[in-house]
Amino acid sequence: MEALDEIQWKSPEFIQERGLNTANVLEYFALSPFYDRTSNNQVLMMQFQYQQIQIPVHISFHQYFQSRLSEMTGIEFVIAYIKEPDFWIIRKQKRINSQVTTTLQDYYIIGANIYQAPKVYDVLSSRLLATVLSLKSSIDTLNNMTSYHISDGAHSFNNSIHGNTKNTTNTPSQTNSDPTPISNLETPIAMTDSPAIGAPATIATTPTQSTSTIPSAAAFDALLTEVVNDTTNKDYLEDIPLYGKGSTLELLGIKPSNPI
Image (tube, rainbow, N blue to C red; front, side, top):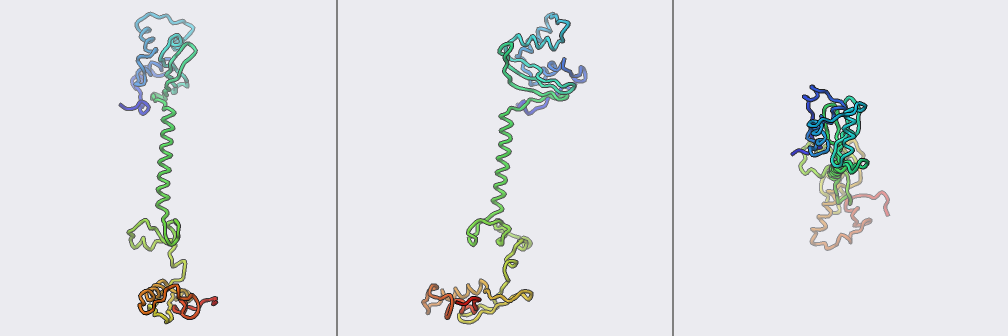
């Protein structure tokens, strides 16, 4: 069965035959599934239907009906707000005595449509659920925007020099779409030949850029490979001086800008 706070009810036949106003709005509401047929309203309607009840001439039927309800105890429906010609609020309440009542539910009549007002718990639950889902979506988006690189030692955004590392398969167009490639951050360098130990390294640059004395990674890889694979020379890497004769800079053919 569908929840009452999720349905809309109306009776075009009643509206076409009798119209809708404050005098008959409770009768119109009594036809809806929101109405409780065990309420005091139903008891009074049965009395008016099968008994001859004289209504005083100085008050309307609606006023007399409301006054009779105030003399009873139990569940009742009353008109809580009137804004004719197309808006009423019907309130379901439990009457303790003629002065004390407890509100149970409100219903809105807008035009010819009747709606049940949602409970505060339902409204807050819906808003909190929407908030949690939005936060989860935001966190997932942030996780996809960042990645961890050992070279950085921390998390970095995917628009850095490393590109988007979340995608393991890239098309050629995606590979070249990095907004900040390495070539824009340092002078591109290509080694013509892998240098031997003691021989100066030959460095080639692009025609539009100035000559750089910074060796590429291939030069360091070649130097490291020869030192590690050298079975005749048992020197450790720590024994190779950084500057001067026999140093790493001399082996790579690099002249330091600030010699010590």
